[in-house]
Each structure stands twice: as structure tokens, then as C-alpha cells.
Length: 260
Image 1: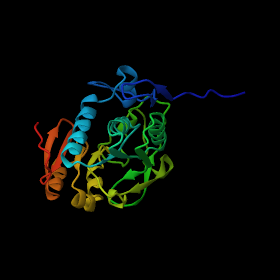
Image 2: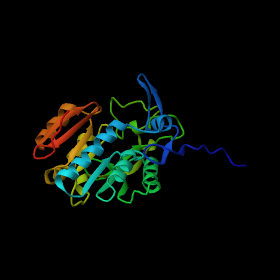
Image 3: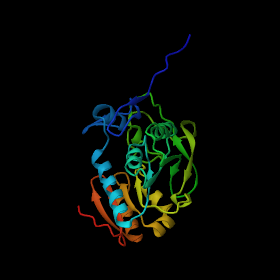
Image 4: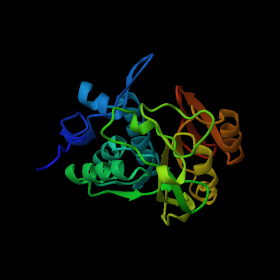
């Protein structure tokens, strides 16, 4: 006799195209329900203001520099940004997405395929300050939780995602960890960094890339030391603009003018 086999990942229509989402990707907090899956299933879209901001920046860079665009999505989750960027830049841009949670990565890759984003690729890896491996907590994707809120490293302030998370060897699995400096690309124009507290690590592992390519960046800062983050950006020659939970970083040599 077969045992019950729950369906956590499902296909859902959305404003971003057909998407593979996890129907358990939700958690109730004081401000409402959080979770990419919850937003997609309840509203058919995810963070449309942030998505539209990036699409505008990509278009502006194309207009000013008259060249094809390369955008990196660090902490891509199921790939809403990846798919939107790739569709928007069809014929003139490429997207490279990185996701550390293995099961979420499978959904990311599936969403790239199902939306025919031939100008996007996905890599299963954590992005950090050095290459190697990282022990990532095992997650039960059949339990209601905010899977995108998972922090890959243990700290005194780890967010409660909705289920118990363990960081010991028996509660983790090994995931490749790379640096952006190790990704051999001829150009990089834009980077989104949403890695749940490892944003500074990503920048540390991208020092050569930032010096060479001077990309625009959108960096979530709510789980990191904002002062250290801003000081690091300044040392790399970047101006910064605070946009809610994110910091928009634009190199001082960039021709793009930002009004906030």
C-alpha cells in the first residue's frame, strides 16, 4: 500500500508567467503573511515595485551604454526576478541566477525552462566570500514556512521561518559555495544580492569584479550591519541610496542619474 505523498510544489499562473511555487511558502507575522509562494498564490505577483525598479534600471543602462546587459541574481529563490529580467531583456541581455537551497533551485530552473528564458541560466550554489562548500540547513518543504527567509549560517538572531532549523551536521547538507570573482564573465552590469545576512560576504568575494565592471547593485540590508555595508560600498567607489529594505548602489563613475 502506498503512503500519502503531499504536493508541496505546484504550478500557478502569475503576472510573471507560469511559475512553480511551493504552496506551503507562507508565514504569518505582525504585518501580514510573508512568503514568495503566498504572494504568488494570493495576488499572482511578487514585489512588483522592486521588480519594476530593476527593469527600469536595466533598460536605462541599455539606453545609456548601447550594449547588451548581464545581470546576476544572487539569492534568486524560485526566480521571479530572473524570469522577469530575462523576458524583459530578450534579445539584448543575459541573466545568471544563483540559489543555495537545492529544492528551491529545482523550482528556479524549472521556471526558467517553462517560461522559455533561453537567455537565463541557473547555478545551484551559495554565494560568499570564498569558494568551497557550505553546510546548509535541511528544510521540510511540506511545513508552512517562509523558505526565502532561511539564513544559511547560524547566528544569535536567526529569523524564525516557521519551523525548527538545525545547524549541526545531522541537520544540514553540503552545498557548493562560490565567489562572484570566480564566475568568469566578460561583463557584469547589475547585481541583486538578497542572501539573508550574507550580503557583506558576497561583496567580499566580488572585489575584483566590482573594481573591473562597476555594476549597479540592489542589496537587501535588513539582516546585515548596514554601516559596515555602506562603508564597504564607499571603499569600492559607490554612491548609495536607501530604498526601504534595500540599498541601491551606483558607482560614482556611472553615467546613470538616480533620483529618489
